[in-house]
Length: 278
Image (cartoon, rainbow, N blue to C red; front, side, top):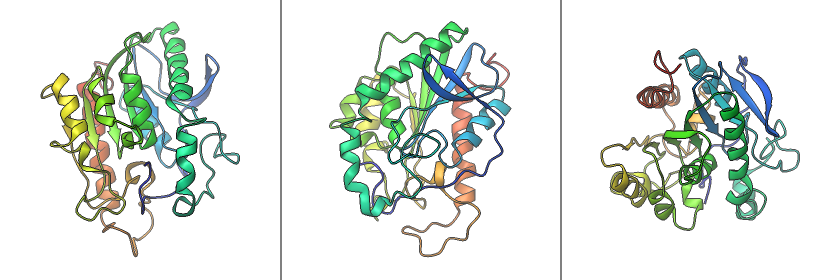
């Protein structure tokens, strides 16, 4: 299930955007940076393309010499937020049981993945030839599915999963075994405490990681953040003191910084940011 008990809820963005909104073959997208040969596609969590700090991350990728595209992929529920995903008022503790109906309905892979393909086709027509994926929560499941496709118009070089919810899939290890690229995985929470925790399938001995490493031995990396709840990288509030958090909760700002350092280092390894990404 996406967003385990105790996971972080909606975080309103407070970042001054540097990017712009464009239409990419019928799919709205937030684009930061100059579109050249290589691009990062960020696939958002259930609150959509303006969730938390996702656009700040996109702008950071642009500042690092790359380009980032965040497509609007989800049919909005009750108006959503910025026309995408869940509304800010959605109470995950009370309404988590409604999510399977979305994952098997309007937000199913068969409905969402073709939109990513449309975006890639539009980017290819503008000269993009390589891309990487950064998936957050539900977006990790979508990103992994995209990575299994063999006929994409742009070559996929690698991916990153941030507090992933690939276990929405009936068989996430089988899905991972079909992936055509290596991954960095940043699971949240302490499996021993369970609350707000991503399952151990994402750790080195876990089924998802082992499936990836079978195809790309030594090319994958997983770093767990045991003191942070699911959703921390995109939606952890670094401006409020933590009181009564489900699992620790301390060090949010420190772990967000460390997590982003790992993400950016991986994107640099893929050649998607830095001096060699033009």
